[in-house]
Amino acid sequence: MPLRRSLILAAPALGMACTAPDAELPAGPAAAPRPVTALTPGGLRVHAIQTGWVRVKRRHRSYAGPDALRLPAILLDRAWTEWLPILCYAIEHPEGLFLLDTGETAAAMDPAHFACTRGDAVFYGRNLRFQVRPEEEAAAQLRALGLDPGAVRTVVMTHLHSDHAGGMGGFPRAEFLVSRADAGGHLGTLTCRLPAASRLRPVEHDGPPDGAFAASHPITRDRRLRLVPTPGHSPAHQSLLIVEGDRRWLLAGDAAFDQGQVARGEMAGIVADPGSARGTLEVLRREIEEQGTVLLPAHDAEAPSRLRRAMA
Ligand SMILES: [Zn+2]
Image (cartoon, rainbow, N blue to C red):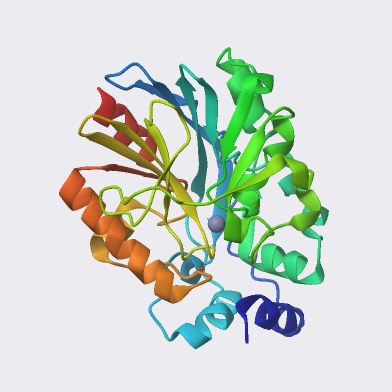
């Protein structure tokens, strides 16, 4: 049974059968840290922007059991992770201001935000907790950096989960680049919260192999910004590679929760396609080992300081 269909069928029943798992959750975390800005040797200014915090079930982050039990294991887990950052990235490039993901919106503090479908409401309601203040939204933080959200014309979407797509509304003139197979939505996409379909631009990874990646797709004329396929977390999850000579940085979304997970070869729990996710984990390991690429995932608390160190 496809994962989406099994979730829709299973989630309401599981939601009704279990008691609320929130008792162990402490008060929300402090305000998100200020953005971290680093300069590449070639003069690109890269900002790591934290749009609040998210907690997930431990088996959502890491799961080693049978694939067939993956989703029920997450739904029934009562143990939460610590609060994790929700990171997106802005890149000041001579060809424009680019964004990688849009982070979460403060509207996520209202459970009604997730009620696009019954399955969405149950999954987000049971399995994720958010802490996002209005001033932590990506557009607000860009303004605080002196950058105009209206100037953003291209946003690379690694995938369409709420904590990556929630801030899309803050970029009224942008076009959102989504892998073709994910563009219609995938498990965990809040389709009722997406902008008009005309602003989603499906892209193919139709360029040559690049490092450990099977394909690539440059999005700037100077080819310093390239999309690469990192499927598994969503069916066609993509990442953004920044390349200058032999220096490489990978803005990796949810291809892995953190760098330690790649080093350990540890599978995340919430994957749409376990076979692809295993392949991506191996590709990331090779890319880091062979190319010295700096990995910058969306929920890795060390990513901003890694960005700053790598570009120092
Ligand atoms: Zn995700």
